[in-house]
Amino acid sequence: MATIYELTDDYRRLLELLEDPDMDPEVLRDTMEGLDGEFEAKAENYAKVMTEASAMAAGAKAEGERLIKRAKSLEENVKRMRGTLQGAMELTGKTKFKTNLFSFYIQKNPPALKIDNPAAIPKKFLIPQDPEIDSGAIKQAIKDGDQFDWCHLEQGQSLRIR
Image 1 (cartoon, rainbow, N blue to C red):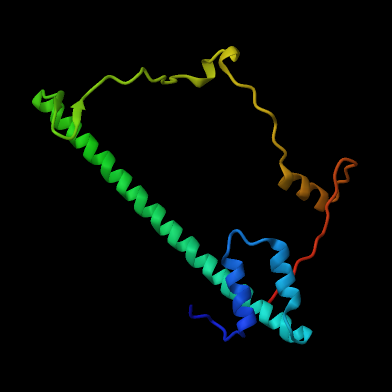
Image 2 (cartoon, rainbow, N blue to C red):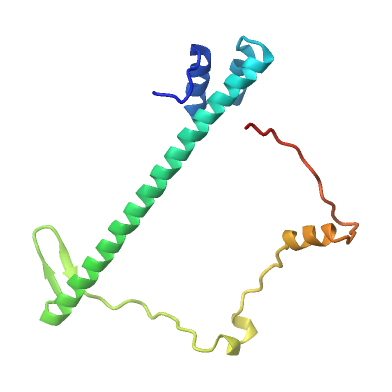
């Protein structure tokens, strides 16, 4: 596998461990702790491994999106072909027949409910919904100076690598 950075064999093995979905986090942690080197060099190599793993994840995600688009396209083609075949069967009056491999027939679907006036629906036909918390509005209210005894803002920290 070609990598962006030249890594030592130890860090290359660490990258391979990151690719294993069944890897025990404790084994990964022990491997990371066991790598030799000064703290700064170790941190730099960690950043290289993380950068490479992130690039691999982005590539996998892009490939997944490409495959999803392809699947949707194929599904649309099948839907279009089904409609064309059904239209041809209805037009020719051949609504039921068999071939060596398939049976073809047109059947009625179950009745579908179409709502003409949603405001006129009686409450007995409505499903009550639990209210959802608007955390964005609460955060903004606190930032604007409101104080509440039932919540607070908490500031965390995270590692940034440039």
